[in-house]
Length: 543
Image (cartoon, rainbow, N blue to C red; front, side):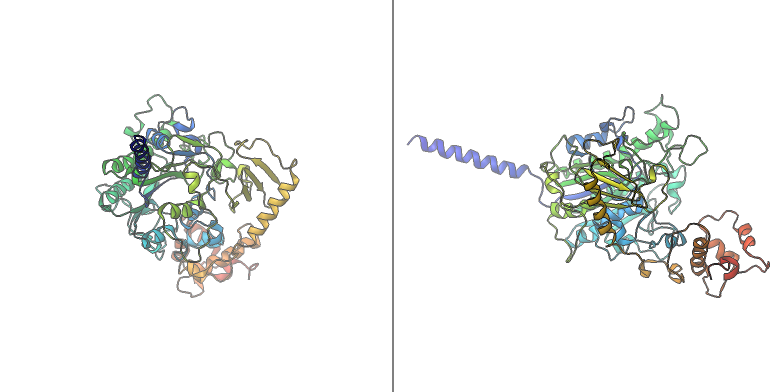
């Protein structure tokens, strides 16, 4: 009989252990913080082996969470990459192929002027589930300073302060001397403070949440052009020569903003109840060698991966991805094999928070929460890419597909092909296409099948009022007749009063680059009457 108390004690101990496991686990409905850097390379983090850049707060995030080495964004430039995050769908489904620009450029590329706010949107879903939602920092889900672009509120955000987007600017309401607007991130002085100001808003938002679950985007400026740094920013690098000194200082400044978020979560006791994720929208910008060149200070590292921004090689799309959620995401784990993608963020966060997907929603990604929890998980959906920008140098791939560890990239003709196992060969040093023709044929057929599902036209409702005046469908800009077709399009866009002629002001206002506008105008104005007819501007070939 003496054994009964022992048995009861043992059972009690087991129950206590189980209860203890439950009590130390994170909250079932965590807060979400998604920090998105801009043009930051996989190799720019100290924890990824950079020999000089100091990133103590990102290193801490990796140490206290999991570092996913095989995460890819779904486009090698900004706007479509971000579209994939907030919709959970490939950006080509929404006509977003390159960055949003002025409306004439968007039309020429068969793009809308902004992401359709009626798309399935992660912030809206979270807001409808009772989360407070906010977006601070870079926007770029519209472009060109269009007066009628939807505000962030139309996408489901309770609060926002942005650059490269409409509405309240990131410096508005804060004690900074800089102006807001499209140019802030390209002003040498202001560019050093845009992320700091965005983080000011983010910290305030977290403090004011007061027990309400929240979803927060903090989308940093670093390390997009214009890369800049203050004298204080550069102090950790007294022995580093330019242009690396400015670049390293900018990365470390961004790292400090991550630290500010982690610190306020600690201060408020929210760390264990918050899933923090950090990533970058694409690989590092191409570097220039001369001080007068635009990307002289863009000195990012791919960590040995081929390609950079604008390339579907892994250096353009395989970017950092760190996740921390104490009690759920294992600490100190490096996962080099799980094939995570940007489109997985939406369904994974729904699973993590217990929020239901919108009715009828179909994601191109999948719920990867088991992988977040440290469990082996093979993805069941392929990842597809379609790059419609220039195809020179390492930017030559037009289409790509990932199936588990295998990545196939194709040129515009779909004849040139490279096949790599990006787990065993991260640098894509060996092309296995000739050795595995059956795999190449199968993946090429899957790309064709996917491509057939994509829209080939732009919804006119997603164009600015000026763009909706375009008289013809968009076509790729090349030379000759195609150039004239684009002029037909531009003429319809720029003729604001629809009187059949362009004034100098209408012509100048339509140009993205306004240098020598008057001289160029006169080059078209054959009769010198100060007005351009359609024939003068377009020519006779495209009538």
